[in-house]
Length: 163
Image (cartoon, rainbow, N blue to C red):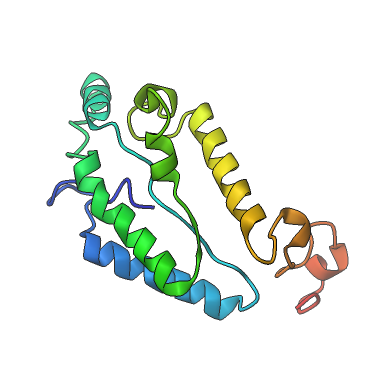
C-alpha cells in the first residue's frame, strides 16, 4: 500500500498522505481487534523509479504515471514507519532495502512501479528476516492458526465448527 496512492493531487488514484496514514492505522487496529493473538507486520511502500514509470506509461498509452516519484512517496514511507513505531508493530523497510541495491530501478521493478521477480525475492528475504528477528520468533512454524486449516474438511463443511 502507498505506491499507488502517492500521485499528484487530482490524479484518479491519489490519496492524500494524511488520509493514507489514517486508513493504514484503521486497518492495523482492525486486525489487532479481530485477531488479538496476531502480530501485525507493516511494509513500507516500494521505491518508485518515476522517470522509468512515466516512460513506460507513455509507451503503453497509459498517461504519464500521474507524477509518482520518490519525493512524492517519501511522506508515505514515513507514515508507515511512524505507525509501526507508535504501535510496536513489526516493520519491513522494503523501500530502504530497495534503494540500497545497485541499479534498483531496473533490477527490482518491471516498469518503475511494480516489483520484478528480483524485487519480490528481496521482499521475501526482508520479511523472513524480520519474522525471524521478532520476539518471540515468528516463522511459519510458530504462527497460531486463526481459521481452520485447509485440510480440515469437518471444520470447512460444518457451520460453526473450528471457531
